[in-house]
Length: 409
Image (cartoon, rainbow, N blue to C red; front, side, top):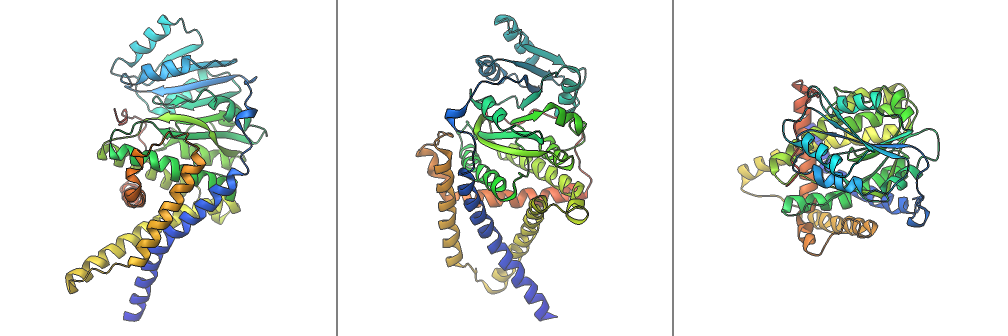
């Protein structure tokens, strides 16, 4: 029995060490090869001939809504209209939108005011059913400042009828704190790299980015729009599209500049919400693995499962390390493994910096977070995975209503 326990312990220790290494290498290789398959280039951007609605659901965003409205108003695009759905804000958000619309005589903008707070998904569904008449709808968040060419880049990817959605690349624009800079580095190197790798290796991505995603309207209608009970509507709608035979693509040239949480509380709340949404989708789609196996989708779901197993193996290894220290006074640390981690992190991050091509406007000053980034990323994943599973066990689900998130301002 002792030998069996020791064997299991060694397996968990090995998995704890090896999983991040293998995933990092896989992401790096996939991201590099994906670059060769990006169809768009800055020379191929053309003005859209299709009708498009740019849609935002807002709740208590008075602090940032003026910047977003200004950026949208300055877009010089034909066949594009704008819809803002206010989800019963209790601050001056609606007043600011109306004042802006009046000041600039912005007739392309439609403001929809919900009679009660029901959540982002419910607000978007209402607008999609009662206002949207365009072929495509671009959904962005209230803090999204989209690049002038983003719409064209996204639309260019809809070259086949089965493509239901195309998502773009978020770039964090607030870096006044170490936490904000770390997230900027994460989006630039890891999140972008993972989506590139998934696109190349699996011809699919785990989730669209809700801050910048264009949908084919008929695809949203086919899946009965967004699930109002989902914790995170973006990952949920991605897999609903897959279930109905649609493809989802990633366009790293389409950029949206966003605000990230700059408080620990706001950051952890965001990551916990993301993780719960991921677990919900995993549970909903397990039948893909067992009933109707799709190689690429199975790999994506399998990677999510492996990530949660890794979180628990890390917890086990950490507790074991503490017990060994308390019993012997020795702290066992494998210097060679740590050095490999550090070197690999620097290589993966460097690849991300090169692929970014300065789109994130990262500076030498921002690189001060480089030495601790690896701990930040995997540590954040660990906390999010464990907390999401505990939340699911105790019945926490999406409840429809929302609070305005920590925008880091």
